[in-house]
Image (cartoon, one colour):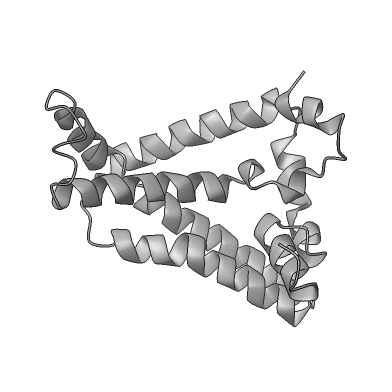
Length: 177
């Protein structure tokens, strides 16, 4: 029984409301980890935290696993989703919130990584590995990745994207957390 099926016993489960089910957020988390480690090495903050024997592996990770290419691919896909939403006459608030999410989880990390060193082949291989792990996660939890993304635009139109949904809840009822 998957983690979400166990959780489903206690609460109705809508897979579209959980960040962990979206590849974009996996890439964003990868970018955040990369940026923090890169910053720590450049500022020499990791010298007291990371043993000397591990530092070469971290530096190799930074050289070979830059998420910049993955973020650019995700930005292109999200921009196409945004165009689809606009074409389907989506509510202006949903388009604005979705655009804000795209800006925060894709454009800002791209800006922070734009001057970092990339090795395209290694970065693409890293992205393929991430895709494999993501696909495995989706299969283990009983979700069809193709069906999930085929319904994504309709769910965003209805405000059922994780962060957009939470933002709409806050905007409708600002007193609640």
